[in-house]
Amino acid sequence: MRAAIVAKPEERIAFYEAPAGKKVIVAVTGLVLIGYVVAHMLGNLQIFLGRERINAYAELLHRSGPLLWAARLVLLLAVALHIVFTLQLWWSKRRARPVRYVKKVDVPAAYAARTMILTGPLIAAFVIFHVLHLTTGQAGLPFEPLDVYDNVVRGFRIWYVSLAYMVAVSLVGVHVWHGLWSMLHTLGLDDERYRPALERISHAVGVLTALGYLSIPVAVLTGLIGGGVE
Ligand code: HEM
Image (cartoon, rainbow, N blue to C red; front, side, top):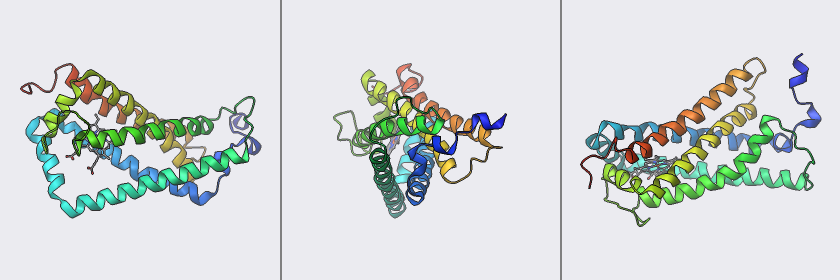
């Protein structure tokens, strides 16, 4: 019986009741950020093709000057809107229901909303550290401008740096998984007929994104890449 698995309207949590416009902004900016995260992961995998390849890729990005800055601005704007509107939605949800339910309604959206508000700030803190590490070289870790290969290998050989990255990219995977699923709901693309398939796709994108990123510190720690780097 289909009705048994669909939450009744009164069971729908406040996350869904928040103003629609804000949710659409969170969804659309989330999509932009997921696009970046997936593209960045695929670009980074070129490290498996060797030093020349990944360094040439970094040089190409840096040489694209105004285009690079335009992309950075879009990204920054997306991050800012995503954070501001998420916090507003979260805050209005808390204000609407200051007393927690004794028994939480465990629909996937409730779980997603709970984990998103935890993984989001952790990912934001990671990105700040990460930009200081590999873009500006101000994290106190080995850094040589435009030598991405050496910077990644020498950084990830430090076990706690690799560990921090592995935890962070796993959180990114969870955030992408739940974010994609919430976004499909917000944009009205979770028609009941396609729901199981869309849930599986969201899950797969999150897991594959995390695995793609995870493969890099694992490859450095196991010596699969980095031969020839002191
Ligand atoms: C194993 C994991 C990762 C590796 C090896 C990696 C590698 C890099 C490298 C080498 C750069 C500097 C590029 C350059 O300036 O030439 C960079 C920049 C950046 N990365 Fe990552 N990254 C990883 C994970 C992530 C994740 C999970 C995110 C987002 C959640 C992310 C977001 C960024 C951002 C925002 C920049 C700055 C881009 C810019 O300068 O415009 N990275 N990354």
